[in-house]
Amino acid sequence: MTNTADQTAIRNALAADRERQTRFLAELVKVPSDNPAGDCTPHAERAAGLLEELGFEVERHKVPDDLVRANGMISATNLVVRRRFGDGPVIALNTHGDVVPPGEGWTRDPYGAEVVDGWMYGRGVAVSKSDFATYAFALRALEAAGGPLAGTVELHLTYDEEAGGEIGPRWLLEQGISRPDFAIGAGFSYAVITAHNGCLHLEIDVKGRSAHAALPMTGVDALEAANGILSALYSLRKGFSKRVSDVPGIGSPQLTVGLIKGGINTNVVPDRVTLRLDRRMIPEEQPEAVEAELRAIIAEAARSFPDAVVDVRRILLARPLTPLPGTDRLAEAVCRNATACMGEPVGTKGVPLYTDARHYTEAGVPIVLFGAGPRSIEEANAHRADERLPLSDLHKATETVALSLLDLLTPA
Image 1 (spheres, rainbow, N blue to C red):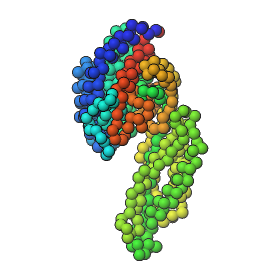
Image 2 (cartoon, rainbow, N blue to C red):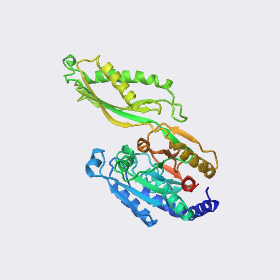
Image 3 (tube, one colour):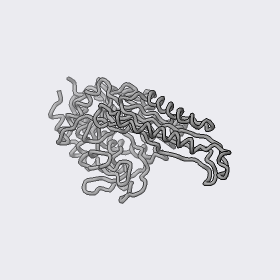
Image 4 (cartoon, rainbow, N blue to C red):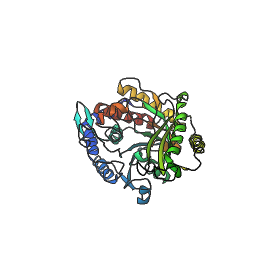
């Protein structure tokens, strides 16, 4: 049973560390880690140094260069911190330090970590450098509690979430660097996420034959064939609203054609057009069936253009996150403590996006998502200009995680 003296010690430790935690986060925001281009080892080295200043031993796991390049990045070094308190379960806390590039429209320095009216601004401050600070200072406070605990806490600080997580969490697990029993992944503070969408990216390559625009009948118009395929895909999309997930917060499947390129010049019949599509899958869908359906629809549409050659290539497959046995135990502890710390009911839900948390469930590790952040990605300006984080949420989320770890690791 959790000792109230340990809870008080955690709260006191966090209160004493607030300014240091804010400075820690600011230093992480100030070091760029844009992905692309994905040159992330410099940020990992800075983060490792900051963690060592807090007294942690930091393992640096450099991902082999050929594997990094195969995943479209320049450099990646994953960080692992381990704190063993005794025999018991291993709980991993995972967040990522790579971020999307700042883009246009900022009114503040995206690497300035400026604090205005209690909000810190900067690229990655909410997604998800904040949870470097959440998890590190939660572990630091847990150590300060001093009570008997049974188990181990690990920090998994990775650098390829924006590229899919293949050389971050998945690599750590496949290499046997970590074998956790449970995990908590980066999230926001007003819900505990137990499920999320999957995602399939396909590239459709349509090859025709160029011809002079004065004699288009002598060529094969790749754009015309691509348009037929697009029409079939958009027709499929119209029916998605009838498929609704049973998980609150997920909604319906989605399909977006996000990239089209091709053609030679205005006066030339296009000889090649390439499309890339994004298909979001609800947890109830099977990725293999979704891909088969798309390929069948594309093939059927292509039959109307027999002189064109159509190839389909999978770019990415991220499976949906679904609860495993043990997820309920994690969720109950985090929801209970979040409700107390946030001052309002915090429950479980799903989100209509995908994260690298799926790599833990694919390895059989129950995971929930919870961390520092406002109520929505829109309020945080995540992935757009003026990304921001309320520091009050950082402090409350850190207390929630520390108290949840205390509950989960306190001997019965």
